[in-house]
Length: 66
Image 1 (tube, rainbow, N blue to C red):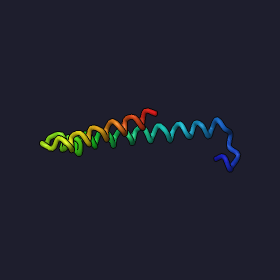
Image 2: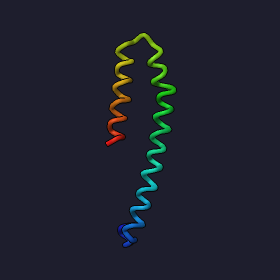
Image 3: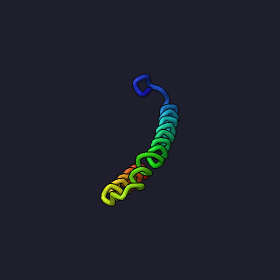
Image 4: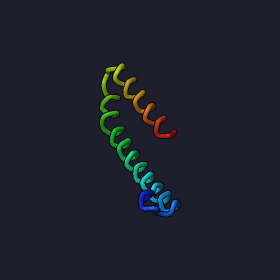
């Protein structure tokens, strides 16, 4: 759009739409991960794995909220 000399506001609106879609995709992936991988890990007796999974969730959450 920039190369086609589109109006700046139109480009920003398109960017906002893409950001919204990516946030929705991120949310869906997080929900799926929590309901599958994370849930399975929390159901084990492996305390190291539980801690690793918890740290992964915290790391991804921090990155997403920047």
